[in-house]
Length: 423
RNA sequence: GGAGAGGUGGCUGAGCGGUCUAAAGCGACGGUCUUGAAAACCGUUGAAGGGUAAUACUCUUCCGAGGGUUCGAAUCCCUCCCUCUCCGCCA
Image 1: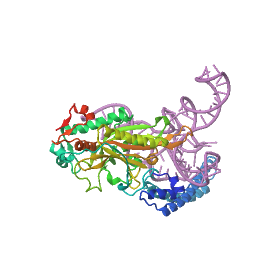
Image 2: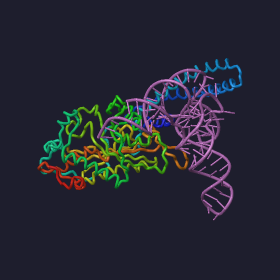
Image 3: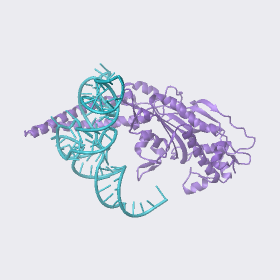
């Protein structure tokens, strides 16, 4: 959520910047609503003040044993006016709030300007895609041929876009999780957190999934809980409605969780394999930092995610998302894209974003400024470190051999009982 | 699931229709004293929002959340949420 004051006083600037994302602000409506709001709020508060004064004097008069009938009549008239004003103000504020909640974040000045993912800018590349001297397979064929990856059974148990892993492939999946958690806690200074996988609507509003993206979520109507689409939601909401001390920051959290996404609107997309599933697992990094440090933190967090790929020796590139491709809540995002031989292209495996105060404002996640003693909104960041299913896919495809076996990356062998191959 | 108790400012805790402008204590901050510190004493002490150029001044709202009654609600009524204790069930 953007600062209401910014919209009030710098509407032209905001309109201009959001236009870079392809968002059109109804300038005239906003300005008019704001005008009415101001008038209505001032009137309402004046009437409230008047009522408070009169009620008090009634109290005193009554205590003194005076006649209060005429005073009660006056206040009745006042209250009729006040109630009408309060209702009107409520309606206006709801409209303004709805409008505000629907506006995405303002892109940071370093974000490349563009319309679609074609305009994203490659920042750097690491590693070299492997040349195969034999007919290579994609992960779906590799896994199915090894009888370790089973989409049919998963479809029977649940439905489409679910998968079932068996044996060493299931273990490799688990090994990846362990490895990532160990790396981020031992070497990158994150605190491991085990979080709820069901969250309430307030939490989802805090991080920006609601109200606009309800159709992407699995909702348990009976309890009004939602399955988390990412650990970003529970992790970031740790800070909701709290005023933190400067000493508390930065907070760096890592969690492994399953993630649940309805994938509504992606019906024809990535239907093969386990690239896009209703349920997948992810190791998520979240940082809550002082505003001045958030861009340094974004570079650090992105580097932390990259370290996983480097240890696994998987070729990847870093892409800075352009204004048109940026997610709703993000001010700046780096995507990490891993090389997938089966698709002969780089595919997203992590998305690292700085949300600045956008989520913090929705969550009222604040920080006490030790100098001014005032509260400030803190800045929130997150990134996958990494998406486990897609990492498994990348290992399968990049580490396959001519016989359809999969070599186990060195850093994972200890987690695999010393094994070097899956066959 | 059954029975009971409770949610008040950073914390403890009083208040149970009208000077609540929320007592008191602790903590924190500032000051006096001191070579320095402690102690003692004095003072200050929340959040969100509006008007405004304003960190000046001022107004509104906030006692778990949302409704209601009333001229007036922390206080009365309704609904919901959460916490604690005991019993039952259970990984």
